[in-house]
Image 1 (cartoon, one colour):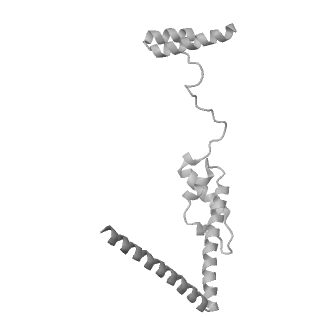
Image 2 (image 1 turned 30 degrees about the horizontal axis):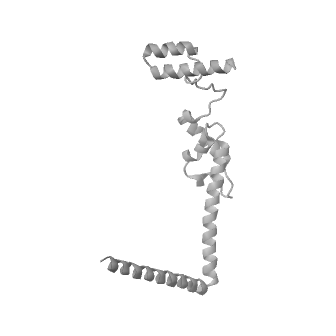
Image 3 (image 1 turned 180 degrees about the horizontal axis):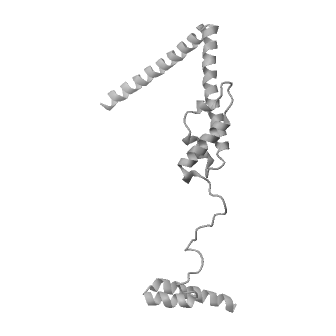
Length: 169
């Protein structure tokens, strides 16, 4: 049964290769038989698609540039739809309309606005000395022994002995 399946698979792969080659040759023949008008129409269609994509990129860039009051200007294009309305009839980008619409979005969603002034970093309790905990190694050893945390106490005692050995040298 395995051999039969393997044979069928091999023949199907061979047929697929033949069909792919024939399709490629057919595409080449059709391309050679196209008239100049058909080729020009294809180039025009391709150019039109590229123009639409470039306009979208340009409008998005203008939107990001106009989003000066936003915390993250890269978010601004997500909130403005219908980018074609920002293009004038002569193909220019209407930055005044973009600025007005961005202002309206910020009025509706103030959490998107940039916070001016210096921001204070959030405190990180894992850094620095704690006010309620023991400060020296001796106090930490006593605290660990009082809690019954013998592993921590032994580790701290070893560290204390290592420091004492270093200072005696």
